[in-house]
Image 1 (cartoon, rainbow, N blue to C red):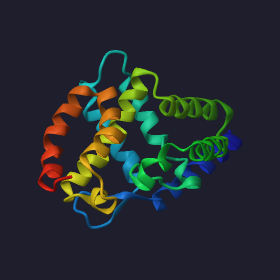
Image 2 (cartoon, rainbow, N blue to C red):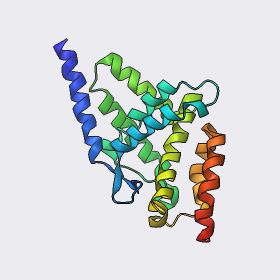
Image 3 (tube, one colour):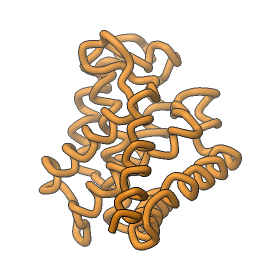
Image 4 (spheres, helix red, strand yellow):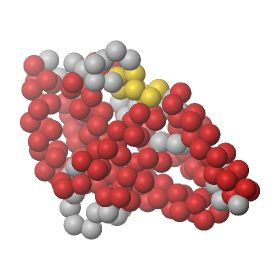
Length: 198
């Protein structure tokens, strides 16, 4: 029992480091950047509150699990903003390999049963093939959009994002798992871009 607890707390203490990883997106009042732990917690709340928007086959509680752990790899790799480097860096093979190695290291701190369970959830989220993972991915994309809109542009201004870039990099992912939500969000954010000729 004590050895198991040692492993569990080693993982939990490692997870604390996510609070020191800052993202490109500012919080809603635009006073500072959001950290990755805040992002993960907020996404879990999104999954809980927006579960009624999910399509068939979505397990909202499994989505919450995915969203709580999906960015733990940023402890090692850092945040790779979706609009950085013309959007190419985010899905780059070397970033994916570094994140997979980080997942192996971090989840391996846990006892084998928990390690296997969380690694499986992380890989499912990354693959985005199951209805639950697509739902979770959609939420992961929509939350920064809402923060940027609320904060007057946030990272859209910093990265000089156009409407076509947002739709291609973000809207497609949101639409994949939550088409009705994307329609609702799109109607609210498109005027921001149109007003700036972007």
